[in-house]
Length: 450
Image (cartoon, rainbow, N blue to C red; front, side):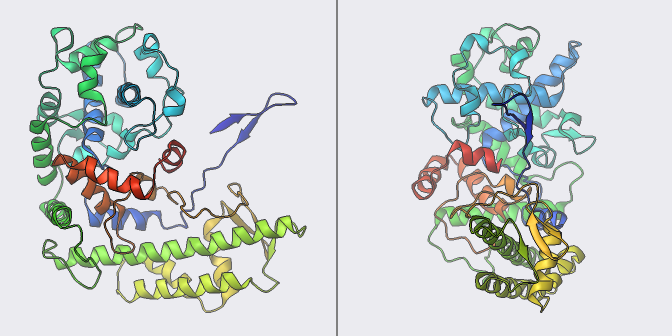
């Protein structure tokens, strides 16, 4: 991403994303997939519907010899849906809507497909990106690869869209046909009031569409094993029990009845303990970054030398990291990447351990000989009490959390599935209201964690 910069003249400032993968991205994805296979980052129904509709409209447009990709078409439809949603709520930030700052002030007459398909019009991280795993797993699309542009609607996908758009016929045609026609010219789209009932992300799907989506969620996707389907169903049963009894105690020492497969529960535990170790490592790096910031303000320069004694606060964080790493190793997991990481976390020498963590970072902090110095994504500021998602995998965890007392380290996919299940049962608003009472969501937070 580049920002225009120039009081003294033109130029650009490159902005590095604060993403610390620590070399364990594959392990994070692995454990999340074991927790709730195929869910990706989906947490409410309209995410799935709008992405599927985008694939369907792009197919229809290509059938009329227009060279449109799934991505640009789905992005344009999502942008239109969010514009309509903001128009309904007086442009207030909402977790199911994106682009409040980018689209504020855009007039209806400017809503041509040509403009909405442009990359600069809408957000860089649309909700569509969270559905790449879910659409094939739910059997709503056929996929010749893992890329969204390769998707093609299945009969199940077409039936889902038909149920989602039932009783809405702009200009006496289907919503899909209306949008296909919209892609053919530069004119603004018409029938916005009718389309709003279908597209606005904050409005629930019709009951029949929610029933069909529930069936797809519980069904075996194409090229998906029944073993993975069983895990998704068990997780769905578990979150429904929690929805009905939200005060129930949940902890890692008591396997719930709904998770019938012992291996599934062991994977949920292992993934949680690995996440806690990863987060403890990030806490160490955060503490180092704060210390460098203090050194800078104190005139010592933007450097922390490993030839000097480590600050007391860093020692405390390192002890917590070792405990977290040992807890994961006690699970006797077979994942080699995760085991190597936690073995590093158990290094007995503090400075050796810090050196290995900074090597794994390399973006926010990096090594220069025996000195820790700022990397490309260094910010040099005090850590916020509520930090955004810390890596690419956690980036899917954008929705607000609920007041459920989830066990520490639990995969964000389970929390997302809880909200999706609530939406499928017409109960999402209640849980979003409870969540917002705890931690209001702002547009800047949504963009930062998207």
